[in-house]
Length: 243
Image (cartoon, rainbow, N blue to C red; front, side, top):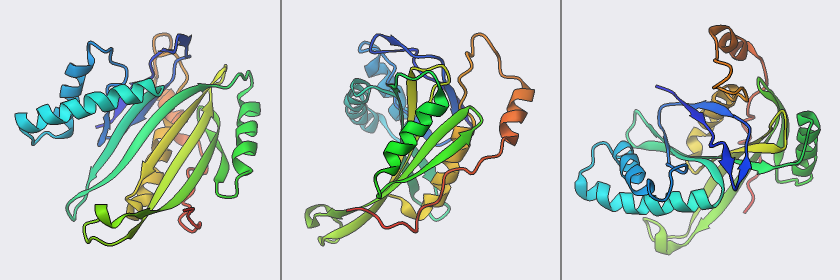
């Protein structure tokens, strides 16, 4: 089951143009658009969805944590924040974090904005930055791999351990400006990096800047979006991670 997401139209007293996208089953969205009064109830509903096999003790304790986390994410300006949890046939889960933010970019031409973003990101040799032609317009992807050193105090075997993490970030200028959307996926489940690249590609195919209250999506529009060919998110596992 997939879920359509529409960004909050107001952020820091600025009116953000409409943008929607579809996320797959397994993506659990924090209620960052809830008001302070609504947040405790929304957090309770979130943990019940995240831990369907839990009990009242787990839900109550977890709700407090996620309420504070949701407040922090909303304060940071994130328009969408979620956890991805995907069950594995071998047991356990593959996990990621997924956020979407909209930042002011003061552009009127999305192609020029994307060219500028690509130039800035490409100037860092640690970035794998590439131009993307999405169904919704031009975009720029950036892949970064990082190797973290974990202290023996927090590892299961009591020894210093290396942890490889990956980040996919895609910047999509709004077609009418003056905002750019930043989609970011982070994961330490690097054995499933290819699957996360594919998931990101699928989500980006659904991004739309049409106003859902003015123009309903038709089957013909859906077919056109599906048939639009582009290169997708590159699998950059052959790159050397930064430390």
